[in-house]
Image (cartoon, rainbow, N blue to C red; front, side, top):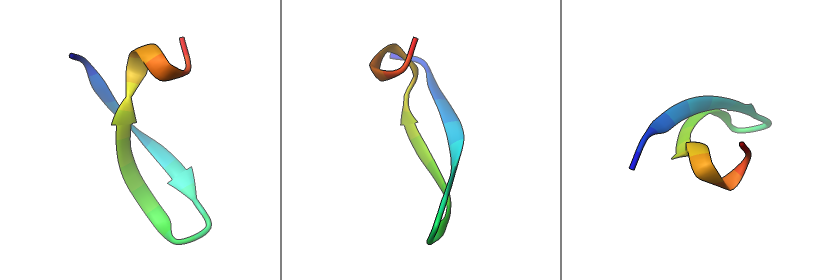
Length: 21
């Protein structure tokens, strides 16, 4: 599963790419 960094209020977190794309 591909992941990418998302800018969150708590900082940068890695999230599953397929969850947003």
